[in-house]
Image: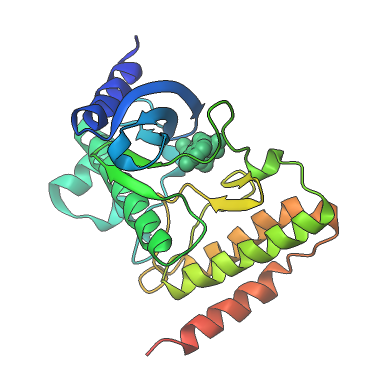
Length: 249
Ligand SMILES: Nc1ncnc2c1ncn2[C@@H]1O[C@H](COP(=O)(O)OP(=O)(O)OP(=O)(O)O)[C@@H](O)[C@H]1O
Ligand SMILES: [Mg+2]
């Protein structure tokens, strides 16, 4: 086992110790900053399976993509003192702290959006290093990313409309995803599920939010071009942005 495996095992053990899962069945995918594991849920969770998304806490994560914003600046620059220095230096303490921030942001965002009825996985628990959430898929196959899903034109129209509705509702709840694309959407039996929220920004406090909103719409729209759908990202983002601004006290 590598050091990364040891860390992941320790993070997964916490969910076992807390009685949320009974075992880990397989790894679904290793991404840039985390791995997703398929777990057997404890009966108390009310589901058969769960996904544990375990963040790489130490030397294994790609920091090039750190985009947690505070007031429009990277959190790396925004935090003063010892913690700020640790983050900048990418020391082990800094990496763990960053990882805990991402877990927090992902858990909190999933919780808020799910509570409001948006299309995100239900979220069960979190620890310092991992988030435990609803598994989208069945026992033998995890839901494909939209990028790899095989939609017919009518399904594509419906999915695009549903995604735009989610983007608008998220904004109403002061959330801009910030890394949306057909890779961070799952398509499962007519369901459309948005995932991967650690970098989500709050437009009330982030100067980057307006541009991220437009980029999210543009990146998602790329997938729908093949169906002749025009994302019209700049106009749409402007429209949503001004409606959001006007709706604010
Ligand atoms: N709740 C879920 N149900 C089923 N599969 C999931 C779930 N969450 C994540 N996955 C799978 O794990 C992959 C990685 O998850 P996610 O995008 O949240 O993490 P990531 O580390 O940011 O990955 P990447 O760098 O690939 O974007 C997803 O693309 C999807 O295939
Ligand atoms: Mg992802």
